[in-house]
Amino acid sequence: MSDEINKVIDEMPQEVYERLRTGVELGKWEDGTRLSDAQRESTMQLVMLYQARRLNQTDHFTISREGTINELSKAELKKQFKGESIAEFKEKEL
View 1: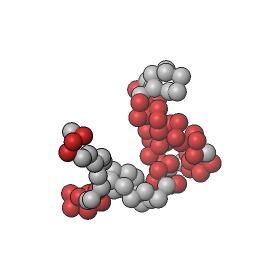
View 2 (view 1 turned 90 degrees about the vertical axis):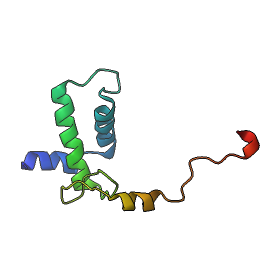
View 3 (view 1 turned 180 degrees about the vertical axis):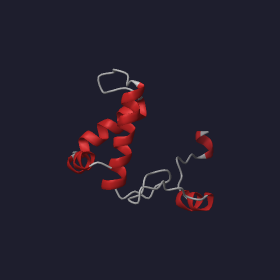
View 4 (view 1 turned 120 degrees about the horizontal axis):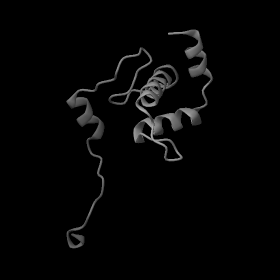
């Protein structure tokens, strides 16, 4: 990885990272302009590099500090979400 890219990632404000991530997720910039294929690819690479270098993520399918993808097993995912209710209803409310 070039020193220039490392410097960009190290100095990137979190707000810029969040805008880039949103652009990749939605396929368009905040003003509604669609990302070209080249923009989406390079933006996704920047987002992944930022996640690997700056965020200590352990969630499923995120990039670790070592540059690997965190893949949780089915058992780990079940344990993580066990007991969490999305909503509760009383019988008369249904």
